[in-house]
Amino acid sequence: MAKIVKINEQNISAVIDLLKQDILRNVFAVYDLQHDFEHTLMYASLENGKLGGYILIYTALDFPSVILESDVNTAGKLIAYAPKDHFIIHCPLELLPPIQERFPNEKHYVENWMVARKGEARFFKSENVRKLCNLEDALKLAKLLSTQEKRPKPSAEKCYAMISKMPTYGMFENNEIVSYASSFAQLPQIWLIGGVCTHPAYRGKGYATLATSAITEEALKNSESAALFVRSDNYPAVRAYEKIGYRKVGEKLWVDVGTGMMP
Image (cartoon, rainbow, N blue to C red):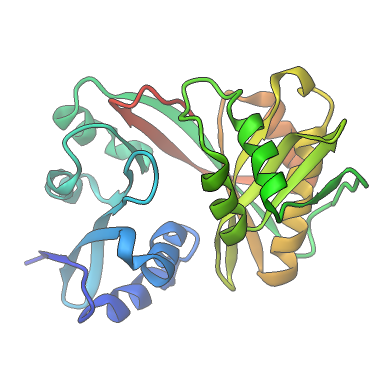
């Protein structure tokens, strides 16, 4: 019979080995367990040395970020370990019914799961795109992020901590950052790209393509592939990523439980 166990120092290595058997599906979990276990809480369903599913709660953000991977039956048991409210959950589409049963007021969105592979990407370059690295860059990034609707307004200190930890590229115009893209997780097999944002006044100019191209180029110099999520109905962004070489490999749900945020 499967048993749900909390991941701790005694079993973490064995669970990471199981997760690595499908690194694309489990990139968040592998990275967080290896690189930020202090802010990572995980419960896994184990039976005879096999992983039947897991729920991971990452607590270092403004709201907890939850990853749920399992079959439908196991999901109902794992959801019991989720926060009570105010969090975002990422999961396969088929897990929506058990989530709705526990959180009937949720709001969900479908995202494309896209991957670019080494040797198959096309890079677009501009002298106005560079890697962000200092406090002045962080101040400008915070200013850009303050234009996002329904998102917490990050401080320059938080932005500086982010660019110090995560490879991040910005597109500059008039000495301001008007678009940026970052990498949330870096593994030898895959980098996870995210946080792509363009100032509302500068959209439609290809700037997100340039910023995303720059971080993707670094990713594919250091790993076999790069992956990202994009809301499935965000057609301009999907087309921009396809130009670089990203191809849809599946779909995921982005579920809001009480935060009011949207992908």
